[in-house]
Length: 323
Image (cartoon, rainbow, N blue to C red; front, top):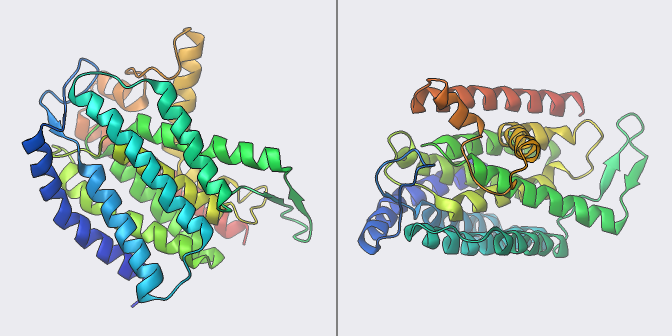
């Protein structure tokens, strides 16, 4: 039995067991997302889905890496785990504010995201350069300042665009599964065992959570969950898919996360043209616009799933063409 399948199975089983417990705890303690005029749901929803996901992910990835297969817990992996925990913590603070119908300020969250990105960089997870696809011996190494900037930009960008995507039942979870599966394939092609195990575990925790989050949702991942998932996806790309990337294969993780990336680009440009703060949440994202056009929530999510699948196919095709 492969290590990736074991990581997937254990992650799925643990989170499938934990989510109902976290739902009960959230309802018992009042840790619920209160409805607002911007949100689709009309009743309070438990928000501790992200807690089940991060417990399952960290427990299983460490167990499979270290105890089952005796793989060394290298610094980039530990940096990813530490950064993901930091992201989850600030997300819980944000979610707590939502239980009081308040918005947590954007700048403290952004500062913590930058800190979490530098944690990964400090541990060796950094976009170091680009390889010439036609002359593999030629490798352009970025200056340290540029490598650090690109890594921080990538991680904070993916964390935020993924957080923006979490607006409909099952949407963020489904997109995360497509993206994780694409990064899993990329890691296997490159022979990156550690990144493959992390991607397989992320698929497991997200698929188990989706069982309770798909329409009609009984629990949501909250900002704690969406920022954790976004951070892990970005970190897997940095420590795996971006390693020895060529000018073409560097597009693989970008297309793997194409739906949230291109949706966010559109939203940011629109807000700038309308002279509105780019960080202030509204209903200008693609999923809200589809619903405004008459699509049901289920139809909207299904359509975006198809678009995400198309991006993943393009990403895998690019990967195979650049081998």
